[in-house]
Length: 253
Image 1: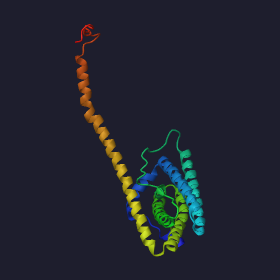
Image 2: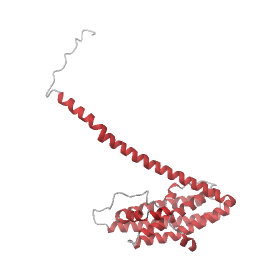
Image 3: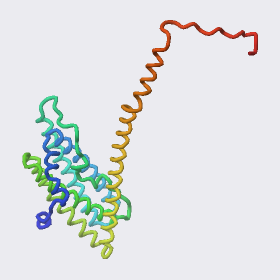
């Protein structure tokens, strides 16, 4: 596990975007809110893993899932404690940058999509292995980007030790249970992650396009109607207008 931790490296894309990651983590307010959001994700993942321990029929996996759940709860506590410390250190009335850049600096995002189902240990282990690997690689680059904040960097480094164990045990147990199907299970889980990433990007793009169209309607299409309404209003006579004569009620027309 130690060798695996030493061999962990951020992805080529994250290494290329290291200056961007440094900018994202530079603001103390944004850093605090990100850590609190990471804490929520870790806590949710711990609850899902506790549920997986309840329904699995494999006693070894039950113990490992429970340990994994305890690790996630401890990670949530570390993130939450550090996030609150940063919030308390901010000047009164200053909440930091409003732009959170969640797409560029996600947490253990895979656990957001965790689905616990009976008799699906192979799929769950493959999903967990890829999620933990992706999170560990992101945490490596986050630790590099936090050279200006040793306390927060130390939080990520402590969590990385657990992530290395999670990567190791999920792959080992998947190999034990799936045998020759291990590689296929991992590929299926990887395709599922790619599909969910595509859906997230598509949803974000649709939201951006919808916002742009609403602004175009407000600033381009609406002003002509406002101009015509004001022009029509100027033609109306001021004061009370004489009403039309009422028709004779004794006649049909």
